[in-house]
Length: 423
Image 1 (cartoon, rainbow, N blue to C red):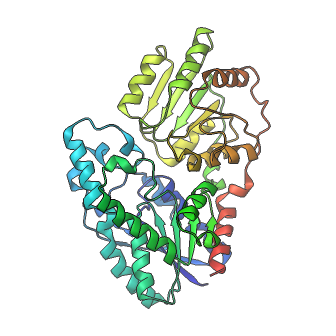
Image 2 (spheres, rainbow, N blue to C red):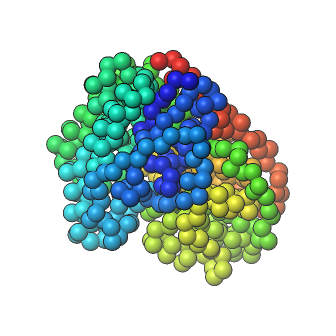
Image 3 (cartoon, rainbow, N blue to C red):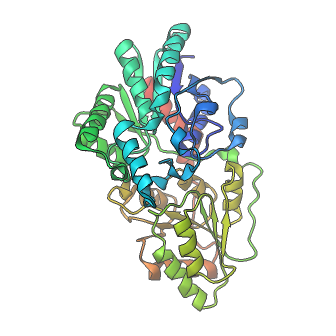
């Protein structure tokens, strides 16, 4: 089988959509005739938004994984992990002047990001692996976008290498970019890196249509070499998970909830239902900012809200299966149309009703519509939200929901294989 070297910062025991994306692709690539090799960072030198050691068990036993050390530029954040700009918490407001200094330092002295401390070690090891294993294909995935610079450097050294750059998020257009207070000089440097990567990679992959359109508008000529391979769900993750009916109507939000996720419309809708004496529970499973906790707790009556600290991936799927309705909230900003969260596909695979708060013309709304979910509301449409929740309460099982087979991890790996074969 042809070998493909996948260079990824995020890997177990790290957690999140970026980890699962390439963990699952690596699992199924051999089924399509490709032998994946993984180059990642040694966890002792890594800074992950969250840890999930259960994912270690999902690494396929035949898979070869190399881990290298790194220079840890995040040392100054060690005491307070919430200051690390990841998992959406870069959108939280600065509480102290020191917070601004830290963010300014990050945005102007660590371009494109502080995880570039891994690059020189990863590049050196990648060169060894390319020569030793006669590798002709490499994939770099980001964020962190600094990982793409490893691919760019390898492209400059090995002209016969076929390079695929996988970009899961915008680069210089990410919605919290301005929160790092970048100067004009910093913006120019970052934009130069972005342009060089997008123009020099043999193929580009994005997770959604709007993100592809964003890059294509900025850099004419790259549209033809850009493919869309979204995140998805793994059927095997649901094996042994028994669907259960909660004792009370339970609305669950799974994952990170930072201050950029608007809740006022949802809370107003639930307050209306509370006045009608509707019985329900609002559950959050994952990291929730302190401001959001206070907002939710003050809006709803005693006993209506449940906060569960971060849980491993399998437990998260268990919470989905034990819910009456799942809540998906798209952060509200100029690029909200392009956001397709990784959990969306597992939400759909759970076959539960989904309440989505976000733009009706966004990529997430389009995907939901495909599988029979017609429940996308603007963030502040408390009347529409309340009516929808009420209908599901009164008529559970009424929605004609389909399992989105085209978004299974195995099917999506087939799409990735086609892109590799086209090089």
